[in-house]
Structure formats: C-alpha cells, structure tokens
Image 1 (cartoon, rainbow, N blue to C red):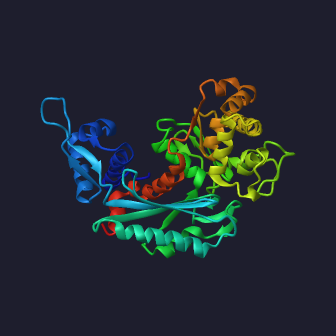
Image 2: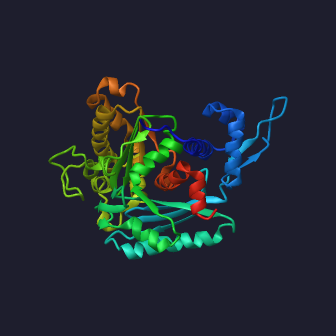
Image 3: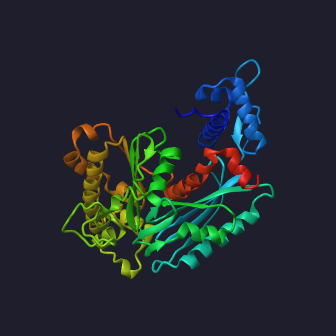
Length: 402
C-alpha cells in the first residue's frame, strides 16, 4: 500500500495554495482565505505567519471596514521584495521585465530585434545585460526567485531547447541553458512557446479568468495558439502542443515558413495581410504598426484594405471554426497582431463561423480580444517562472538566498 501524504507534504501544499490565492487574486483577508481553502482560522494564521516570516507576504489591517468587531487581517504579496525575470523573444522585438510577486511589473525594457539569422550568443547577451541592469536597481533586500522566457517557436519542455522557430530562424538552439549561463544568477530559466504562455496569462490574469475551456490565437509575424481545456494547458507529449498556425486550411494556398503550404499562418499572418493590401513587406511595411495601418485604412474606407481584411478574416474564421468543432471552447481570444485583425474583420469571422462551426459548439461561444494586449507573452513568462515558487514557497526562497 502506498503511504498517504506526510504532514510536511500537506503543509507545503497549503502554503503553495495560500500563496497562489494572494499571487493571482491580490490582497485577501484571512477570513476569505479560511472560506476558500476550507481550513480553520488557526491553520490559516500559522500558514500566513510562515509566509510572512519568509518575506513572501505581509499582513495589514484593512483600510476600510464597515463591520463591527475586530477586522480580519489582509494578506498582501511582497511584490517589491520577491520577483522573477521575464523575457519575451519575438521575431522583431525583445522585452525584459522584472515582475514582482502578485504579477506587478516593476521594471521593463523593450528593444527592436532585427529580423534575420538567430545568433544565440548575441541574443542571450543582450537579454542578460538588461536583466543585470534591472537587478542593480532593485531594492537591497529584494530576492530573484526565478526566470521565465517566452519564445516564438516550438520549445522542448524538458530542457528549453528551441527545436524549431522558422520566424526566429532558430533550429535546435539550447536557449534556456545559454540564457541561464549568461545571467549567472544560479537559477534555471524556464522556457515556453509564446502563444502557450500568453494563453496561460489570459486564463490567469486576463479576459479568460474563470473560463475553463478556451482557445487563444496569437499573431506576431506568424500565428500560434494555446489551448486551455478543463483549466489546464494542452501542452502535448514534449511541449509542442498548440501549433495552431500550422494547421492546413487551404492545401493549395501560400507557402508557409514551416515549409508546408496553406497553413493558417500562411493565410492570415502578417505577410498574407500586407500583400493582400498591396503593402509588400520588402518595402519596409512590417510589424504590428504595419498591420494597424491596414486596419486603420480599412476604417477610413480604403477599398483595397477592406478587401484584404475580408479575405484574411474569412480564412481566420475557417480556422477558428475548425478549432471550435474540435475543442468546444467557451471562449476564443485573439492576441498579438490578430487582435487588430479580428477587430477589423469580426463580421467576416462570425459569418464564417455561422457556416462552418457546428451549432451546439458555437451557441455559447464568446469571441474576445486579449485584455493583456502586447504584455500577454511577457506576463505568461513571469507566471512560468513563479510556478516553482508556488509549488514550494519556502524551499524556493531558501535556495534563492531569501
């Protein structure tokens, strides 16, 4: 017979659960924690005392109370003291942030990444330099407890290797190991696909909070996606799940960067929209600003831009219909440049859904744009880094020198 969980296992689980409530939900009273966790008041008091002593949370009197009697103390995350580094590596931008417990962005840097060859040494050096500058600005008692990175490509979950990243021009790149070595913080770097991490971010902090089944579609030169089913990310066997952008929707369609033809990415990605609108990327029309200009032109009555959005919106609607038929989500979220594309082609997307999605699957479906906008991938990277802390708060903090 297998032994049940030890008292230490139960304590570790309860500490992590309590810290998760504070991290994701913000300041919360002891009384509310007692109700949510189903534990008695003395146990909650002991757990919050442990987390307070470790410097992960603090307890304060509520600022306002309309009730008679002794108010319940409010537990708040120590956002300025406990933080992680979050990195976002896209085809044409790099972003680095120092993110405090509770999801507070304390410091942030963003720079342009020139499209072209992937230089692992140069890239990790630039990211590490930005992180070290931020670390020097942190208060003297602040503790870094992890690092997470979102990259545009397929990432092997076990070791953070970018197995394929056609839009990054990366192939078999040991990104996680290289970045960890350049940071020299003594902490591993957790790496994930940008769209998968953005899906997690929207589910935990964005428009998808409380939604157990959702599909997130992300556009950033290419197209990716993340699927939340039953409250959990569908990552696949090795972590490559969610490559929605390489679902073939038009076998005779355009060439995709992955080598196939007619992928969703090839029909609705940045290049497809710009070329349909007569704005060749080779002439300097690139990036999210270029996409926004097409949408703005369509709003002003530009017939060519309107037709480009109609064409792209029809293919996007077909792709969404396939996903809706397969996964029966409650919500589909459009992020990255697809946020603008959807806003400019919503009628066409909905029209295609009405024809191609099964009625039971679409009748309660909600279509939404990302609440976190351009920060979704960065927030997701931070949550990936915080996962270790939430699993074992005191042990992680001890290893980090807290």
